[in-house]
Image (cartoon, rainbow, N blue to C red; front, side, top):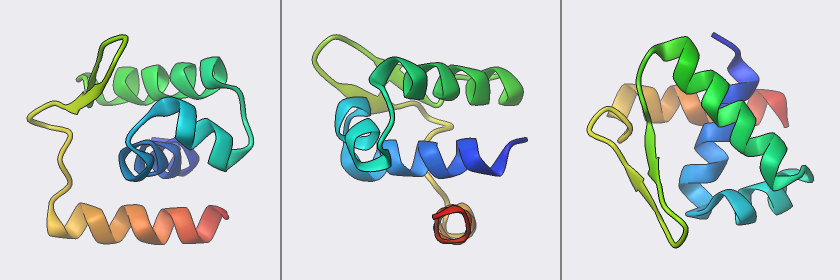
Length: 79
């Protein structure tokens, strides 16, 4: 599993959209969307249900207290 993809997932969740997260991370929306798809493929499950108007975390997507810490640490480490 790629720690950078976890950090990107965390940014998407915190921003509430792929567009806002891509802007914050300084990357294109399509690139970030592909990175999210690769993370989901690595994990073998969907983390975010996407529609044209909104994102919704799937049942597996919401962070647990331990994964919240791990995402924060990964995000801090990669930025």
